[in-house]
Image (tube, rainbow, N blue to C red; front, side):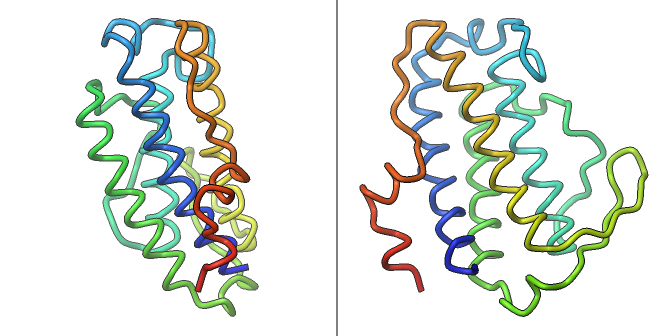
Length: 170
């Protein structure tokens, strides 16, 4: 399972870079344009992803600044957003590489942003961490199409075909 999480960390970096390159084809006004999707715009969804990653990595590692809300837009510009994204990707990859496989059977105790205490299997929380990114990247991918941008393929199996990361992990 550790091999899968390392692969997913590397896949997320790859997919995020491709998506950021496609987002760069839009004007700042298009990135911030109000849409009837979660978080309201392309740039807001992308900010949500950075904040949610930061939140979960804080829960997993106990390191980094706590995140009070995942609804903010602290990075309204694409370059600053991309820089913040890379920091969280580095953290996610380091966490996956350092993960003790025995820890995957443990429970993760954390508090939700609304103050609810939770205890869930760490492996499930990690699965959610990566699935959550895929979900919202799909929204951005679709919104890019609405602006006429034919976004690059960001499919996990496309990543594997291109990189053979899973086949060669560890």
